[in-house]
Length: 414
Ligand SMILES: [Zn+2]
Image (cartoon, rainbow, N blue to C red; front, side):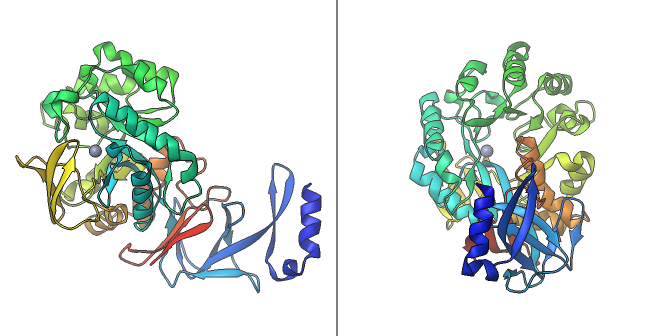
């Protein structure tokens, strides 16, 4: 079969004009047409490399690797001196462009996916709020109905759902509606393990951490501590029991104080825990970006926590059944409580670069490789390594998106 395909290619007129590259995969030989991105600063996990070309195959949708030279007649994309980086992965986003994941509308999910592709996001976890259980189920069903289609549409791919609640602490509910908060129930999550990729839980609401332990034992779901008032010791034991991530670190959780280090202290102290934060310069002081990144290294994840007001003009919107008010980069409930963000993930990268002395590759990792690793997809997502999905962005110096490639297909050009 493969031999026949090779022969067919060689016998066609176009075979002479295409760049032929031979890739060896598990002992099989393929002939692929490669596209080469040239003149870019290529962002790899451990370094930023210039003077090489990054090649990918549109047909297979995979990255082929780095090349010192480009064959004549090869298909070229000129990065014009910009960064060539992995497609961004947003594991915490509620909405964009007027749409909300909790609307349970497949078309709305598609609009979000297409909208955030312009911000360099190539895969994401649509994130539910603490709404009524039936509404969460409807949102899960909507995501389920388009997950497969999202692999090939011209927007970001849906990797699963992050359920933010409903198993949270009313005292740290933030913008989540209290009447919808429920006691942690592992069976509900496991029944939906085909679509739930991550869940936010307050460990102190989970008696004996039964839910956390069961999810850790019986699933691959990322269990995250969030909207929680747990004490340091309880948070440390929750991490041991399997709650290995912290949802929007610092926001809606017990703070790091010198006599009670809280969930923040536990998440920072434990090598097993990854953390995510909202780098919009408003949710947490930018002075913390460097502190967290230096403590957590590759366990540092940038998220947007973007709500439906993202990408929209100032005004009144809705979040989890409550009115919210957008003014500039600030989104609040009527009582002033912060209610999600309108951050774009590429701007999160820009903000961390602007406020730290961290290496460029490490900051890009925070929005690509690190979230991919947190949700166990770094074997195929999150970095520009041969064999991984060709999810690639080209940005200018200000991390504004010039081009987004997903699975080898260009889905956005500025
Ligand atoms: Zn959120």
